[in-house]
Image (cartoon, rainbow, N blue to C red; front, side, top):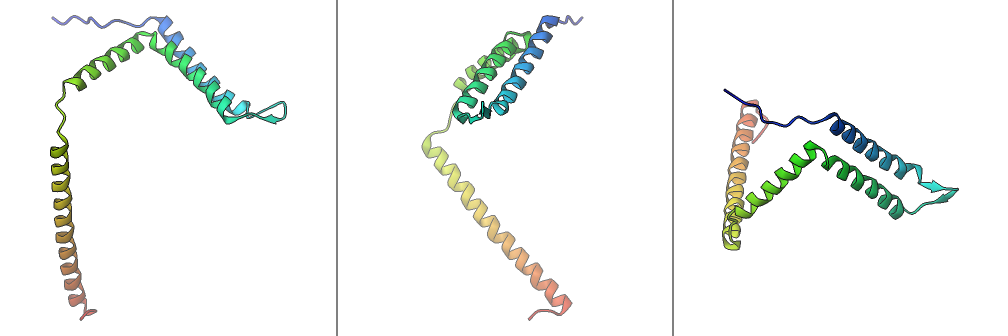
Length: 130
């Protein structure tokens, strides 16, 4: 017997997500709307800062929903898993990189040789080469 323990989002979550989207759109629209203010050009810095404020508020509102809380939990668990990983040492990284470079070089030379051989064969069959 399977029991679905997944929580259902409320209609308030939907309203919050719509509000978040509206804030994003308002921030982007404001960035372009305030390109000039009373005939004077507005600094891009102030327009970007204003847009970032709107984006920040929109993200905050979106993270208060059930989906946002799940996303925060996932990110927290992902960070914990990354801490558990064993990363290669500098020497291992350099050794692996050199091995890949050598293999790529050898493969490039091999493919150049096959291409030259096939080109010579086609030219010989068609009578266009020496």
